[in-house]
Each structure stands twice: as structure tokens, then as C-alpha cells.
Amino acid sequence: MGIIFDIKRFAVHDGPGIRTTVFMKGCPLSCSWCHNPESMTAAICTVAKTVRVGDKTFTENETVGREMTVADVINELMKEKIFMEETGGGVTFSGGEPLQQADFLIEMLQACKQNEMHTAVDTSGFVKWDILEEVARYTDLFLYDLKIIDDELHKKFTGVSNKLIMENLTHIHELGKKVWIRLPMIPGITFTETNINQTIDLLKQQKHSIECVNLLPYHNTASHKYDRFGIVNSLPELKSVMKSDLEKTKMQFEKAGFLTKIGG
Image (cartoon, rainbow, N blue to C red; front, side, top):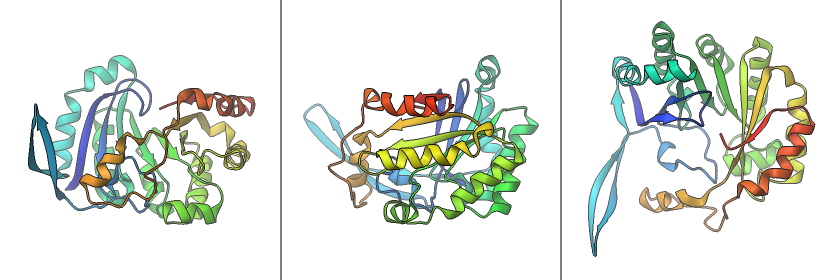
């Protein structure tokens, strides 16, 4: 049994083809800019939701997260299998951090492979290697989130050291697994000249396993979630990043030899 907080159908930014993305609750990081703050805690929670109809507003309770069995999830995924097959798509497990529910994730990945579905795992890489190694056995593609190369800054803005994340990226590279690097472009934090240059230098060491680099522009559209879930927003004034702002950065990665896309 696992805790899922969303299943997104017809996803086109979470790996190749048309995919179904399964969002799992719980995350060991506490990124200051988190787009899904409702995913941070592993527990199912209930929050008040304000609904506006015309000139009237109503408050109702919203439950975030639900328990699902492997069979429950597979049943939902099978409804979309034809779209996966026709487009070279598949299933992506995201979060939160899916590796927080490692045993459940492994069972789901095994079930997906039994049903001939392409599998991708979107992860921060912050997990013990023996767990990630087992997950890798049933994972066709890793969407690997890199944030800040400087360890002290990483601790400041995510709450954890990046040493384990870097070590695991090297191990995945050594396994020969396919990797898409995902870089959230947060103004003044990850989207800085220093961090971009350090990231390029790091990735050059593992170039042949990296299929592409995704530059993910920050959007502040999720700021209202912090109020809804009673979570302190430490970056309330953070401005959105436009795709046009990332053209120079895209060219930097391309010059270093990486297929690079703005967005997922």
C-alpha cells in the first residue's frame, strides 16, 4: 500500500511520448521553491479549500493523498496503455520523492515491466545507494533533479547535503542507465552564472549516459498552495522565469555537447 496524491494523464513533459505520471507523497528535501508543497509530508492530510461561485465563496475540506494498492495503480495505468504504445510513452513516478516509498515503488515498477510499460523515475537521488540500485533494475529512464552544486548553498535552500546525490548520479552513470538531467531555474539561487558553470563541469564527467538536459523555468503560480496548506513560503517575492530568459543558458549547455531543452 502506498500514498498517492495525484495521477496525471497525457503528460508530455515527464519523459518521452505520452505518459501517465504518478505523484507519490513524501520528500526528504525541503526546497525553498517547491512547486508541490503538499507533497512534502508523507501523511494524508486534510485542508480547507475555498471555492468561488459567482459572487459567493464556500469553504470545503480537501483530502490530499490517498492509499492505493499496486493493483489500484496498475488498473489506472492500463487505461492509458494504448496512448503509451502509440507514442513511445510510458509511466513516470514522481512526487514528492518516489524513493521515500521505496518498497511500494519497486513493486509498482515490477508490475509495470510485467505489463510491458516503459518506466521513468523522477528523483532527487537523495537515498541510500542499495535502494536506488534495486530501483534501477526496473527503471528505463531516470529524470534526475540537480539543484545546487555548492554543498553549503544546497543545505541552505534544500535542507540537506548534496554529497549523496552526487555519489548516486555517478553510480547510475556507472550502471549505464539512461538519464535526463532536470535543472530547476530559480532566480538568484540555482539560476546563477556560478551554479550553471559548476553544473556543466560536473556533467561533462558523465556525458555519455546523459541523453538530455531540461532547464525548468521557475513559475510562482504555486505560491497560493503555501497558504492553503499552512506552510511558510520563504520566497514569497520570487519572480517567474520566462523561457526567453534561458536561451543563453541553453546555448551554454549545447556548446558543452548536451542536447538541451527549455521545459520538461
